[in-house]
Amino acid sequence: MSAKVLTKAAAKEARIDIIEDGRGSQAVHDVVVAMRAARRSGSANTKTKAEVDLSGAKPWRQKGTGRARAGYKSSPIWRGGGVVFGPKPRDYSKKISKSLRRLAFRKALSERIKSGDVLTTEKFAVSELKTKAFVALVKKQTDARKVLLISDTFDQTTLKSGRNVKRVTLATASDVNTEQLLAFEKILVTQKALEQLADRTRSPRSHQTTE
Image 1 (cartoon, one colour):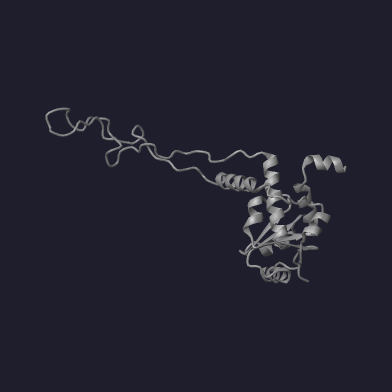
Image 2 (tube, rainbow, N blue to C red):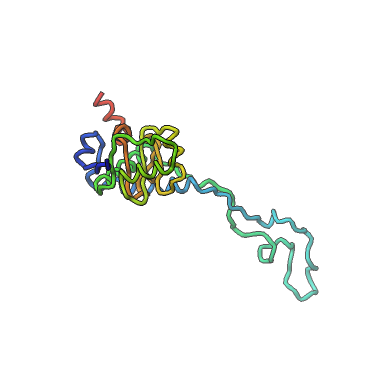
């Protein structure tokens, strides 16, 4: 049985807080930029004139040669010398508040739902440890080329069967992020995962009012 498209009405019934207006676009941009920046190693490194392993002796005398004055061989203007204002190891990570992350997540999920790109299924689990079985089960749900599969949890049989399938990425509802929500053609969500996604879209205040 193929998966069903999660409509906006069905999402509201599932208590997903959908953003109707234009809010959140900048938040999505800021969060995705921050996530990509955090993945940068920041390991680029160059040596200054003080760090280059060259002699500190004066290459020739100050006067009488007809050549320009030179004080050391590690000068940046010479080949093999130091680098001026070159890169040094640094941390590229950016600070993003929890409220901004939540807004970006809500916005990304809302847009994918409104576009009809989110599909729901009762559950997703393969009965045998075979990649072929995993691919066949995905094809029954959707024929999309790139699929993000979200569940509350995955058993080891499903995880091992799907780990080599490049066009499908498995993520739990508690760990899926804004960037992943935007990177795939279709998003396949199980019913239990849908409940957890709904919790992530609601603010702490709304949790208090409903309890």
